[in-house]
Image (cartoon, rainbow, N blue to C red; front, side, top):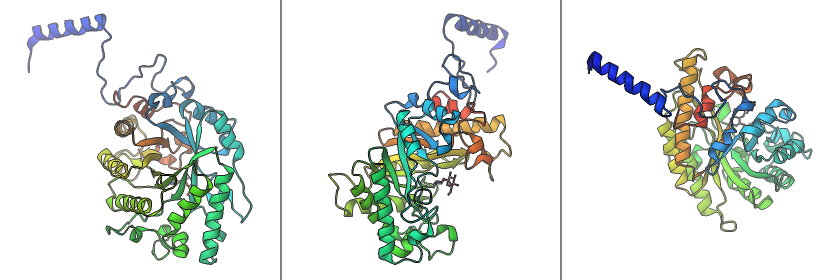
Length: 384
Ligand code: 9MR
């Protein structure tokens, strides 16, 4: 519509008046968000920013990963300021805790420091096909493998009882090329699968009941701990896998005797290693599906790749940073909507330089611990 010169003058006058008379909002275009916190500008250092977790008080915990090497460093202070729960990136995996049979190396100093700092500790992970010493499940009888698995679980949960509030008991048991069958067992990793990365010695030697045996051992060892099944690609871009996990949790929780009125599997961890092409609707669909089981949902390993094969960006440009921030905002709008079902949202990486996918710039802080646009998107997703 052409309003003519007079119209433009009137519009300009109204615009100027509004600036003077009230707190005029320009209505941020995507990516042009400015924090409403005094003293915060895009690119602020981690230590001047309002604690990120405070944005989600009463909704869900906000977490990140930790390593024992982070203690007494700026990284620990960053964690303490912005997050209220942490997950050990590697220090609680089977090969880290019990590399040799019977010799337990517990990251107790780290866990104690986490609790003293007022954060919660989540345990990752007890039973996995990867980062597991061969002696546990290779070249041993089925009975010995069950003993090795359940003993590991019992020892570890006993050591951390009262300190680690929740555990990823079984990690990544499902194949990525899960079957459309209603029998979830057909989707489990097993050594029969020709793809090496899809193998699970646990299933091969014990059979599919290794999963419920693991959860029972964990429940017996620490009845207070919340027990999770954790896996990746659980959004509906891979519906076979999401449904296989759904059916497994439903079946085990229906079949296995209730423990003190609780379900054996308390929750599902959706790892959430995303990229710019992830469709948030597929995430929402899975949250709805898992929530229908009456279990908790943890967004357990969140990151969003910006530069990757198939990305519109070949380097981490300003536009790539904005697109990434918008994706984070879209996801957090969904997480807020389902806050009643979501216990925790944990990022898998403090800064881009130390992320497992550092070449794709996937997390909230840059290598100097300055907030990327993604930080502000998480801080205020509705406004972003
Ligand atoms: O971030 C972890 C990286 O340092 C390890 O080298 C890797 C080894 O498997 O595991 C990474 O963490 C994984 C997590 O334990 C399970 N889900 C996928 C994570 C990223 O690979």
